[in-house]
Length: 193
Image 1 (cartoon, one colour):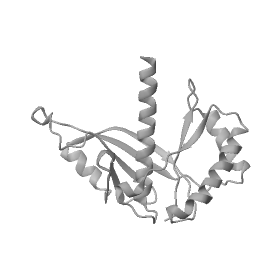
Image 2 (tube, helix red, strand yellow; image 1 turned 180 degrees about the vertical axis):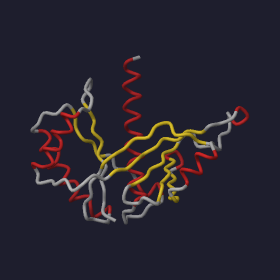
Image 3 (cartoon, helix red, strand yellow; image 1 turned 60 degrees about the horizontal axis):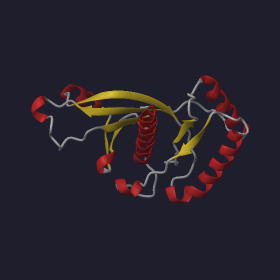
């Protein structure tokens, strides 16, 4: 499976993402000979436990975790429990089972789009992907956009994942990005208070 880098757009303080920024980012992609070949969609869902009163203090339940579906793996569903560094690959029908069990509920679901590069070794991808990221940042810098892309590189071995890239690697990247976004939002909230 080709390597994916999931990039997070970090807006400057006081700004938000809008269609103008997305249009300019797309133009930057085209300026470095990028081509749109279609949309790749991933859906990320936050789950939190629905504890009954007698279970309220139960520590054996993960406080929350992420569920991720990827367009290229429609029959699979990935769970990432960051606190325990666990990733689980299940059949997509697990979502229906979870709804019926009512032990966890979806807090929020987010959709992402992504692109591919034809490399399958995470270690071997570093130089090429790093060079691409530098070119990408340089093209974006010419536009004076109110923010920048951030690449957060998780330590895949903490999740028991090998160097050969899989959909589980993609799921861990999304979980890492979401953790970073939550931390950023929480620190911004703390500053406001």
